[in-house]
Length: 438
Ligand code: ATP
Ligand code: MG
Image 1 (cartoon, rainbow, N blue to C red):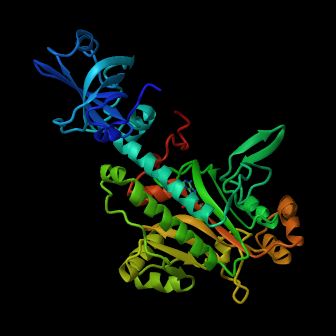
Image 2 (image 1 turned 90 degrees about the vertical axis):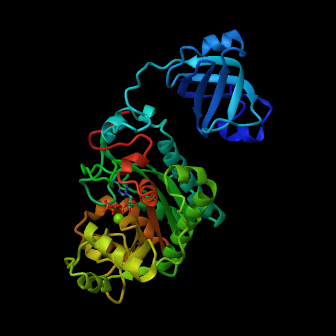
Image 3 (image 1 turned 30 degrees about the vertical axis):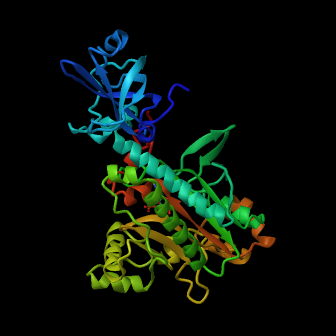
């Protein structure tokens, strides 16, 4: 490897000879000195060329450096750091590894405002802005934290198929593809196969992977390809067991970010991020109608929450409990898919749970119907063709424990956590109705 140390490691290697590498972030010429600022993944550092004392080759090879040239520098880490931007290296050898054309197509420092769309056209260059790197690093830590919680609590990671023969939640939002002359679909959610894995005896499992939504929506909350951490749990008493797993998982992951991503949080001005108190508050239908009334709002019966009601309920919970998170439980069955479990005593309501974070839905789940006859009856009630789901339903004749779970959107959760307005900024290479590149 060319590099021996990242900039973030240099402070504990003072006086030693190291090789650093990265992109030229700035060059400052003074009569006797040339200061070259280099950026790597962990921050900035300065290479100080003493035009009189440094070897001739170094003065020459650094003379024409341009922004975003890629260079490696072998040198001594100065004992006394004078530079404000970071650790300082006195060069012994400089290698230019790759030249950059100048000027760059966008202003990576964001000091000149560039439209998000243009920045995404030049996503590779724009990723070099430390804020973008911080977002992606925090997102990685979030997934690591979610998985760490699940693994240490006995969940088995599974990979359910992305290509499906039938749709799980209705037609219009799925991408169709040609599968050896038959029509197939990209999954919207690994839901049904998670349930089948439970039926197969893997009774605590999770799947962290992509889902696809063919919705031509241009909201700042939707991507055509997003990732979810989807867990499924067998042998639950009821849907509140899934709430306990989800809140512990989320709070563990945020704690991990709080501990491991201090620098990234500081870059993003989010040093006050703290892991939420659990258990999260829960609101239930039909009481939700009364709460909304208090705020002068009516939600039509048998519909899902809309954006406005999510926001009002969030305000209500925040005022009453201080929590930025809360669950919504017992949605109207009419607004939910066929596989949810209804409340036997009052079947208008489903054991269906959403998690709301800062006023926006970040996950959906709840308890699933595991009783064959009820499942078939619900499919009929929803007017769905039973035969198309037989591959799924037939398994419920042969012993399936009560179970439930959730799918937590990764990009959406991180955008909420960091107060980033557009979800596209939280996705490495976002896919939207008009964007398939880069
Ligand atoms: P919404 O109503 O906000 O569009 P949904 O109810 O259709 O979401 P679910 O099917 O419940 O979404 O998916 C579970 C979670 O996955 C959502 O709560 C959200 O965090 C995330 N998610 C769903 N669709 C998208 C999308 N198009 N882009 C980004 N994240 C999504
Ligand atoms: Mg949902």
